[in-house]
View 1 (cartoon, helix red, strand yellow):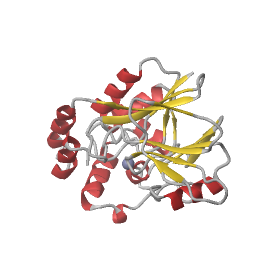
View 2 (view 1 turned 45 degrees about the vertical axis):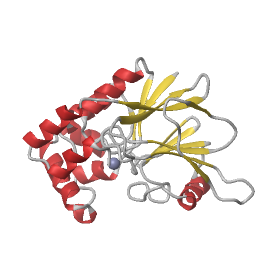
View 3 (view 1 turned 120 degrees about the horizontal axis):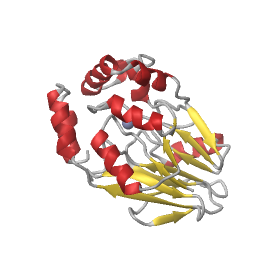
View 4 (view 1 turned 30 degrees about the horizontal axis):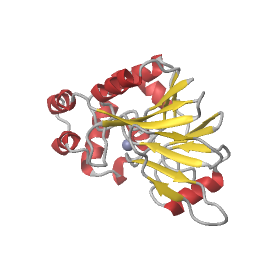
Length: 242
Ligand code: ZN
């Protein structure tokens, strides 16, 4: 069974389509949150996940779009995009976002957007934050999003702190006895200096997971964002991957 792990899509249909084409035939789509926000195609992205019965959890931008989270703590551009998204959601998209759980476990994996201590809002960036999530994790592996950075944390041994690794793109990581937290990076708004869409492919037969980067038509997304009056900083950053 092959599974595409697609996080932080952020209404970027051009990036999502490129990732799905790169992934080829997959049995399931798993999304650790932020289907919408920032980008120009919230309904089209939700429709793809809805029709393909993706396993998906809620992110902070998904909640902001359905007024379940105040945008007071968002930066001004993110808040502007959240309000635009809320005003442009179809009833079906709204219902899909309203139905997303905070965490979801399937087999050996738990999906959560931020951390298990604070699923919606906390960023999992440091070994100490990884330790906290490992202490609450009931499955061997955890898939997170939110930071938009492809990262792996390996479980602490003998009371030591978690180890942080940057997964090499295009090389598979074997899932062994060690517990792991993996962030596949962001499909629709990468922030590691590489503008290519980022996602991961899980092969459950070989128990391997591979982080992949895919070039996509960035200009297509940027032109739509300009057309819809979304903040300039949000479309400009897509060129640089910051
Ligand atoms: Zn995000």
